[in-house]
Each structure stands twice: as C-alpha cells, then as structure tokens.
Length: 243
Image (cartoon, rainbow, N blue to C red; front, side, top):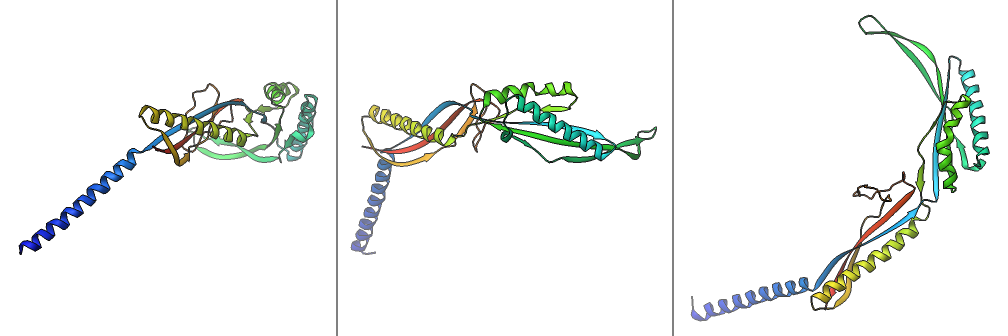
C-alpha cells in the first residue's frame, strides 16, 4: 500500500475516533447535568360518606309463609331505622333471594343414600348510604337489637368513603411537586450548581390507607374503605436541568 493511502486511512480513522470520543463526552456531560428526584406528599382526612349493609332471613317448608314472615321483618327493620333517624331515601332493600334446602341421609358407613327437602330459605339485605357518618356508624353497632324482636339480623362492618378525593389528589400533587423541586434545589446547591428548567415529570400511584395503620402500599394503589380516618399519599418523579 502506498504511503499516501496509508496516511489517508490513518487520518480518517483518527477523525472518526475523535468524533466518537467527543460524542461520548458530550453525552456524559448531558447526563451529569440532569437532576432526578422523587417528591412525596401525605394528607390525613376523614370520611364523609358511609355505606352499611345488613341481612336477614326466614325459613319455612311453605314458600308463601316464609315470604310473608320476611316482608314483616322488612317492615319492622324499616320502622326501626326510621326511629333511629335514617331517612327513607337512605335505605335500599334488595330483592328476595330464595334457596331450596335439603337434608342429606347417610347410611351406617357415612355414605350418602339420598336427600330430603327441608324447606325454603329466603334472604334479603338492606343497604344504608348516608353522609351522616356518626349516626350510621353507631346504628351499625346497635342493629343487633333487632334480634331481640325475633329477627335474624346480621350487621356487616360499614364501608367509609370520601366524596372529594379529586380535591385531595390535586392538593397532594401540588405538595409532592413542591417537595420534589425543593429536593432538586438542595442537590443543585450542594453541588455548586443551580436548578434549570423541568425536563420531565411522572406522577406515581395515589394511595389511600387507614390512618396510623400498618397497611402496605400496592402496585396498583391501595384504596382503604374499612377505616373512617384515612391517609392519602402520592409521589411524583421529576427531572430537572442543572446549570
């Protein structure tokens, strides 16, 4: 190979090598000029809506008599709740669920040798939804008083909600953003730099847990309904330029 050709190839290779090194240095410099932080915000709030369910049942060999007894129970429960201060539009009674029940007959070896019809079991539920959280929460614990009247009433634990979660979420987003910016400013200041413009922001999952509980956060976001007092939290990841 002629000396001139060799020199040309070496020169071109050197240019390419310097270009690659220069690009790598430029990329490294750009990477070092980015500050990535995660901001966090939490807020305690109370529930302003309660949903409570109760169920009751009647059993009889005769469907008609079982249904009549169940409807009498419904009237008694409706009157009981009304006397406790529950408005008519806050109560919703479900349709009646009818189940045929059978008793099993076993032989001396415990083998099933047949079954016999034992009666109709009719079940109905009542749902109370109200903004008066204190009152309904109290009633949900006292409703077993109905058992003393002969009604087989089962009271479920109430569910607690907040109807202004969007407002809570927006407030937390603002606080989390401010927290992230403050963290970034601290990092930049300690590094002898200054904070530049925002390059990217990614919102984390909105979590609702019971206040002072040990609930774990979930990947899709926890949504506590069993605690009356709750804690909302959110994170936001932000990337800033550093000057």
